[in-house]
Amino acid sequence: MNTMKIKRKHKSRRLAFLLRHDRSYRFDNFGWREVSDLVKNHGYSRDELSAIVAENNKQRFEFSEDGRYIRARQGHSIAVDVELTEMTPPEVLYHGTSTDNVAHILSDGILPMTRLHVHLSADVDTAVKVGSRHGEAVVLVVDTAAMSRAGHKFFVSRNGVWLVDRVDAAYVTLLR
Image 1 (spheres, one colour):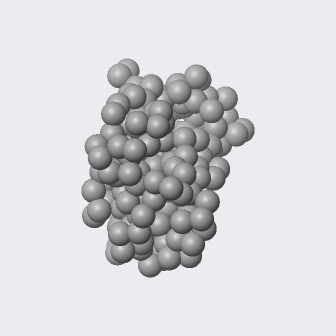
Image 2 (cartoon, rainbow, N blue to C red):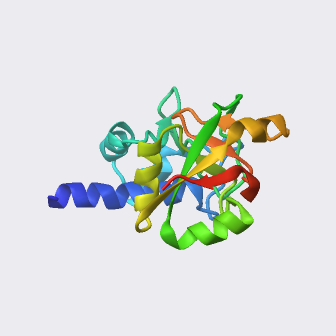
Image 3 (cartoon, rainbow, N blue to C red):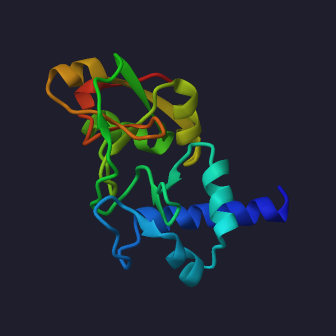
C-alpha cells in the first residue's frame, strides 16, 4: 500500500472518531459537525474530506446538502439523531465478529457496547468483512423475523446498515 493510501486510511479512521465519539465537540441534534472545524482544528483539507466521503467503501460519512457540515451515518457513542428509517427487517440478518467474542454472544446476546446500536449486515460477505477487522471472522445469523414479531424495532441507516438496540442470545445462531 502506498504512503498516500496509508495516510488516507489513517485520516478516515480519525474522522470516524471525530464524527462518532468526540465528546469535546458540541454536535447539533442530528450529529452534524462543521467542516470548517475539521479543516481549522484537525488538519483536514476540504479535498481530503471529499475524497474520504467519496471513497469510503461503506459510505460511512455524508455531507449536508449545503456542504458546510459532515456526519457519520451510524456508529455513534454520543446521543444524536442521524435520522434513521424504521423498517421491517428481512427474515434474517448477519453479524460479523471475531472468534474471541462468540461464546460471550451466544451466552449474553449481541450488545451495542459503547455504541448506541448493534450493527447488522444484510449479507454474509459484509458480515465476514466486519468480523475480520478484529481477527478470524465468525458470522452469526440473527432471526430478525422473530425479533420483529416480539416487538423489537429495526432501523436502516442511509448506507444500508441495519441497526437495533440489542439482540438477545435466543435470536442468534452460528453460521460459521
